[in-house]
Amino acid sequence: MIGNTSFEDAAATFEPLRPKLTRVAYRMLGSVQDAEDSVQDAFIRWMNTERTEILEPEAFLRRTVTRLCLDQLKSARRQRETYIGQWLPDPVVEEEEVEDVTLPLMLALERLSPLERAVFLLHDVFGLSFEEVAATIRRDPAACRQLASRAREHVRNERPRFEIEKKRGLALAEAFSSAARSGDMKAIAAMLATDVSVHADGGGKRPAALNPILGFDAVMNLFERLAPLLQKTKFIRAAFINGLPGFITLEADGELQTTALEIEDGKVAAIYVMRNPDKLKHLH
Image 1: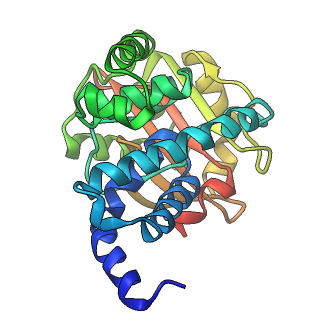
Image 2: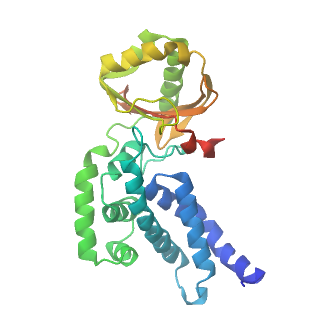
Image 3: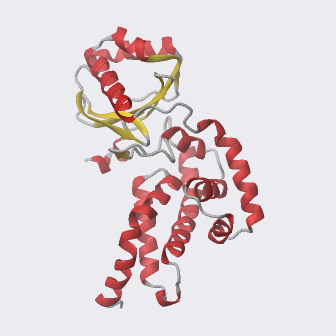
């Protein structure tokens, strides 16, 4: 039985690090709940560790969380194979823009092996040395460099190519939502890129296209068909969703929805819609 003093000591070190650890776990897993569970598992292990022997608690805990996530990714991959429709990461809504891992990059990370994903995030995103990464995933530094190189090949095209000023991004998102809700097809058309795509995740729980909708004409057709429903939605607020400008709405069926916009050269190049209620619970 661990006494209160031991618990308080463990928590005093752990709690300030929890947001950072959760950030690592979420970017590994793409699931808010799974990330929080992994971090909580790490805390339980931390409480049961001989902490006086650990010189760098943050490094130890980051290693612990990463290893727990690697185990989780194996089962997550199996679950994705049977997932109904398109899979998108849980929406993380933030007031400020987060530039390190945007939604398109997170989708690109899905194509990596768990080890490639871990190495890319730890080294290229969070800035750890290959020696630190090697200690985390129990591989030698040379192997980690190879894993990082392979990972970069897969995700090279998913880094943001067009920067958009924060206020402009949110204003565009709000204008897009307003046009969709009012049925202003001319305004929507003016905002879309010619090769625009729509990606919607309903998880089999709510209606959503099972495959991406590609191209200007197909996307415009979608908005025209959805116009009666969109007019019943309620705008809640604009925000950054997984690093992209977007907005939260209350839909006609009474459920929340997030919409994130990938903007290139001033036009909406991709629309990512989260409709799966299981992935929106943390926003209530």
